[in-house]
Length: 119
Image (cartoon, rainbow, N blue to C red):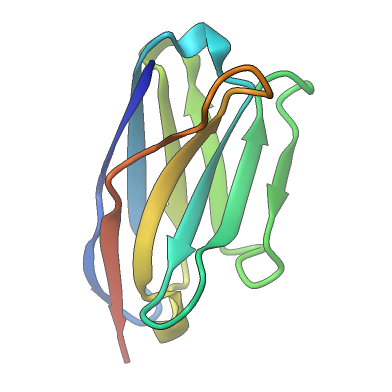
């Protein structure tokens, strides 16, 4: 089992910054990729940024956040981060941490952290 705990959400004005953290515990050796997803009210959950652990640490971002958000990992602390700069009201959502454990194990999700950007 893998347990993910997010922190760092909050209320910020447009143009501001926040950093989200996701601490992983349990059988972290089974994790292939880690990523951040978000879900705004009335919308489907969408991918924001993905960091691969098995493919040389490559990263992928949704076009809406490229150049503003940065995903990173501290392997020693089993923690993933999402640095969010130049925040916009449309970034308002619950942000979830995800760990993809490949086809043999179920994916893990955190409980979510609310990010609200005021205009």
